Length: 593
Image 1 (spheres, rainbow, N blue to C red):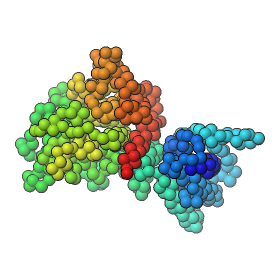
Image 2 (cartoon, helix red, strand yellow):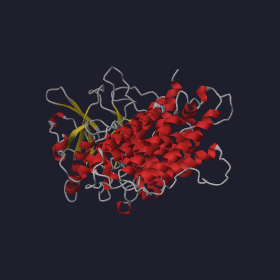
Image 3 (cartoon, helix red, strand yellow):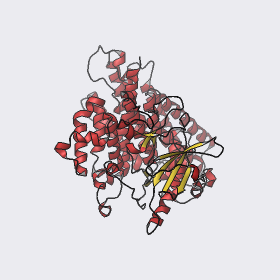
Image 4 (spheres, rainbow, N blue to C red):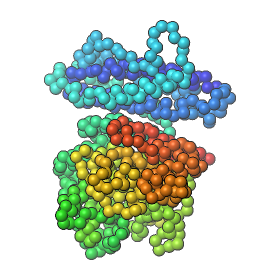
């Protein structure tokens, strides 16, 4: 296929996006608008974020073929290049021009309504700084690199801008009805054009961007959660609602008005004599007296009463109650891999709390879940000699993608999991006669020491073993008084260990054992170095070079992330979560006949 038209199309798209950024830079100076158009102005911000995020995805995809030539088949062309090479069928550049026109029209509306100064200077945010004089045209690769830099700069600028809600002037003169109608009409068209742009992306990639890429931007300021929760934007509203509820719980606000009940009312009364609770058992299934409804209980060890244990027990109880609200079916986003919680139970036996959840639809209530760690160890299922077969490459990529997505969702809710490892990821068995667990529906548990990520929150120490300690970052495997404040980087490191386990389909200690003669496993740092060494040399043979690089990115997470939490969370999505979603999509396509 002749890719010349694709090159021309991409150059034109870069130019149009540059111009749109220039117009938006002016629009962002808008102020002194009233409550009558405040909601519309914030809708405008959401739509521009959608447009800007789409462009960010465009340059992260392989927009042009790796090899040059004019004989490339259509199937070998990357998605965007394919669309740009045939503008008559998919006029991407024309759509971008239409969006630019909408932004220019809205700029004019803002000026005529007094929300923008007439003599506002226009500061260009273009990808090519040489805008005057006789300059040789840049190569396409240089244009793409410049566009990447400009887009990253725009992202930082958008996140640091004064929120729209703080610019509303409550005594401002209302807009003329005709201008308000025209503004809403422009926003409707902007929304439609954005939908068309996103329609060219693969399904899973598009869903991830709209659910999480957008949420990461728009919820960088938690104050925006209330407005975004009311938007009809699907997963963005779900994530905003989750954050909004978390903030209300943090303020000890009663949740009864939301229909979920107060956190103090989440304690469930079961006849505990009917519940078999054994020391060391992680799960129980309990049925109501009528036998109609079954619940899954995941047990957590809690501080014993006496001394400071009373206060810690109270904190643990409060956090588990709040988590049961966040993980309820009414509040849990679809991107969070967790069973629908109904509340918690408490028993003095072995000093335990239990998180009670509905058993997922289609799952057996007669068999207890099996953990990922048990599957990695190839242990026989309880009561049988059967072992699960090794998962396919596609299953491993889907599992890695789902778990990374779930962890990121939990981070966006401003919570630390703290025990995100294969011992706390479990699978239910099908209700049918199948003897194998459902690997396509992982569930995350292990919330015994999870806490909000706010600075003032204290950590509760869990009952640890040498095995559970091996999943902690070396900086956390020190005496309590020397332990640093928990940070996002430790969650990302845990995900790196999990990705290595999924890739090799072995528990982490076995992965590290291959390099133990060189690094030794007697120290926390020695274990980490052994895993990094094994991942560097062998993981690409199993999962490919890109999966290996993502895993190493997580395992080598540096101290600098703790100093820039906001940017680090965004980097984690674009550099890890979205890439895993993308690879899972590619593997699925390769499997299609």
